[in-house]
Length: 182
Image 1 (cartoon, rainbow, N blue to C red):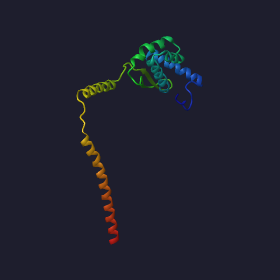
Image 2: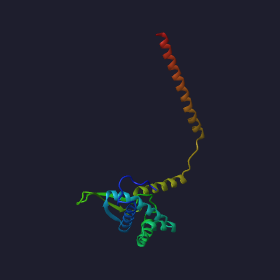
Image 3: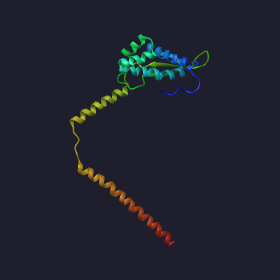
Image 4: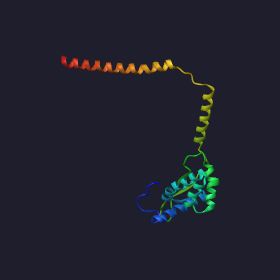
């Protein structure tokens, strides 16, 4: 569990804050996007993403843990049948927060938090495609072994290290000779 935030709570007391976050998470998962203050959006994001992670597992224990937070059975059903399988190949980052400017009445900074519509990112699909190509090419052309070159390459750096030490000794000997001559 993350450490509680410092400073004032979102609803007054800790129980009210928990209830507020549960309600915001329920509404986010039910409607797909909600407009709220930036602070509330940032606080509800980890809770909503954790619920989506439970939905990806899809087992009974996960469903019961989600039901402890989201009490609306229709939202839980939508979460487990639609939202969870959509993000089966994605590792986190299921929501997006977009700032929309201040609220008219009290100038509070507002934001839209939304559940992403696409399941995997383009980068992820490119990476999986590249891994598939790499596996196919490695099966076609096996790597050739060159033990003689490797042993020669291992010996070469050792000689360089010895020569560096010798060069350092020579340089210090020259400096000492110059000091004694002067």
